[in-house]
Length: 355
Image (cartoon, rainbow, N blue to C red; front, side, top):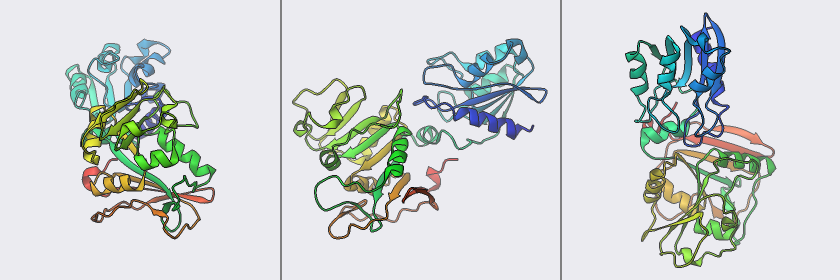
């Protein structure tokens, strides 16, 4: 087997880590004399990293002497929730480490590679992400979360009927897929109209998550929100409310209220960045999404299209009175979900590109 094949196996291992939260997905493979001795991945936030798990999967730790390790991301060199991986790699006698990509996190970036080289371990960097850790890489490269705008619309571009009631647009398959999209983001953001009309829970309802997304809402006056809203019924998941008025009544302990005279997309993203939120899903409504487009803060679009037409005065997608310059996006990926279509596209700007 060639290096790329061993690294591809490491990437497949990395994808098994579904509870890493703000940590990246990482996989590793240990090879000697062209044969795989063990493989492993970073399983969950706060747990052993991929390198340590892979070493632990060896029949005997002595097998590591003179072996090569293929790891998808630069091994850490600092004390966090776990000790530095590079120290263990050196200690057990790994002779060469092949790395998929250098870690963009400045706490690690280059330091792990230097430590290994300083301790006579050969290092090779392939400069490939394997298509994983999109939000993690984006966060450290751009110093803000990756922003995805998601909505469902009809063939005539409408996201809600004219009446001030919740409108179901897509079918079961698209609904389940949208729940998976929620699960892959660290925060879900909506505006006041969406909160009051749809009364959403903003939870992931088709799976149990160790680290569910932060639920965030932008409102004018937090004091006018009813305690009966579904948002407040789940007290196990954090809620962040961006309000233009000070909170004068009690909210559950899981609810945090931030106050400013106005909340622009830039201010919202700044606050989420401070909380190390790496990905934000802007679910609605139309005006809030338009504000993010206007602020040039949309990195990805996910649109579900249903074979329906609402017509008339129904609410269009991404709508406000302000003019927005053209935004260029990549050629979209299109997937059929039952009778609906799912469209995904990323911004074309080079500064926002991520392998």
